[in-house]
Image (cartoon, rainbow, N blue to C red; front, side, top):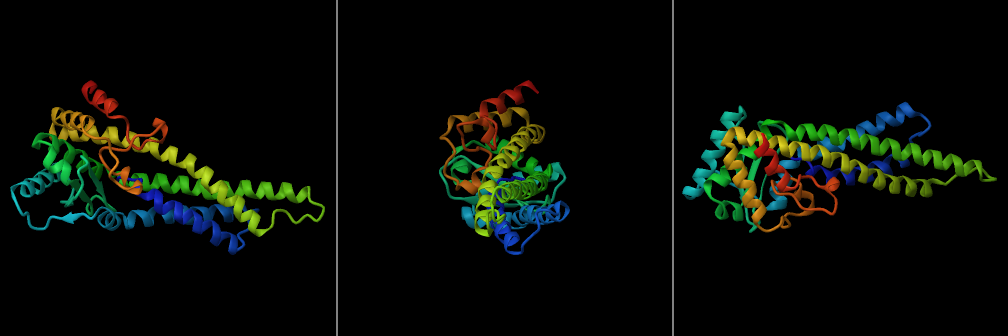
Length: 286
């Protein structure tokens, strides 16, 4: 799937997990118990994000699902997705349009057979049919590859690492302060919670770099899948058109990583999408 819709929800759940675990008095000296709690909260947050991903996307982007096409353009859009979904061996996704001048599209959903593919009005009416077909094939490939579930598992692993590592390090700091404190009281509950919160954020940044790396790999694979479904020339044409269009930026932060055209960043390590130039070069070399 298209994962970084997960990040906003996951970060909120990491914060809640931090507070709840501290209030419950989870014994950080028991590594096995801490690891179990970290896994429950880490994977729980990721899979909760996955379960509500389609609903959240519809609400966030104001997606209008096409139940009955209103014109030939919408009819062609639905028929094209249906044809590509059949080629890819998946059930027909919901097809939607959201209002935005940006050239973008995304796919999301909890499974291959319960997916949503949405395109912006700017893309639908600003690209030719060959280019749109390439974009749709890219999104269908994401669904067929099971990217949402794969990245959910990756997110669960890194969430578990963040929760576990933050509390282990906070415990070490607490023990160090305690050993140097005449009264041996350590940080105290509120100071300990503050340290854990800061460490959650720092390790969360590292985790986001890891998830972004796998997301970029996923984009290259979806481009290759689209070349098989729609033809290499159409996929290259779609990416060239996206490269010539305005920079991505209309999507909210929690949704931007889902689009075919991701936001730019000061460092490629933080980008959910490879630069369009690299994606085009990879297709031409294949």
